Length: 327
Ligand code: SAM
Figure (cartoon, rainbow, N blue to C red):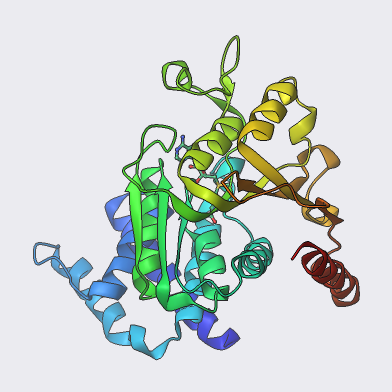
């Protein structure tokens, strides 16, 4: 598997370099073009002949069907990370596989044996988190997924990621804090953008708008996600661990109390973050509905490094215990 990933990554990387040099575009745009070439195998006729021949010989070297879908996902992810290095702001970083897989595990536990369900990520970026979750689900075939993202490059990467993995996800390229043409879903997962939301006019429609100045986008995202969740549906967010220590914590707390049940707060391993202030947690809530109630106990845990199998096992046992007590 490792060798296959390396082979596909090298092909993507070389082809991307050729395209970005020739067309004078950033690496990530070149990567979109090289991935599309790999998928559609369609070269525009009007290319200058040396460039056309170079790309044609790249194409002759590769066949997408020789690579398993997981290999495709990993190779593309490596290339995306290379393209993001040093030039993208931190909030663009893709959600690490370990976090995605853990959220995928939680979704599976909460959804249980429900046969069909809908899933939405309102800040889907390259869709890495969505795929980590989708690939973990037992009922993959009856899962309908949606993603929304404002950044044009990232949504194109999400789209090509989806094609390469031969999956179907419906994407919205838009500011997700504006109305979305989507029926409420069963589950939301999202690694939320953290910081100020610059559009004060749009923020006016939210209960969680700031009284003065810009509102926190992660607060608005929580409110918007609840709006697009069915009653009783679950939401899994990656949020700053200091979520309830900001100047707007009271507003957030009373809003959540009215509309949701707080189900869990799991601190991600401290080794994943540069310092304590940047640490993040997985925050789980359930939208209130007719037959919902607060959990007897909130699921709380301080996750150990994902590499520490023994410590991780003990956390999983605690979580199992929690599910037993609650159901
Ligand atoms: N989970 C993603 C992945 O695996 O690639 C990464 C999510 S990243 C932490 C947060 C994303 O939110 C970024 O891709 C950013 O462009 C997007 N974003 C920020 N503000 C947004 C808005 N108002 N509407 C839609 N997307 C937004």
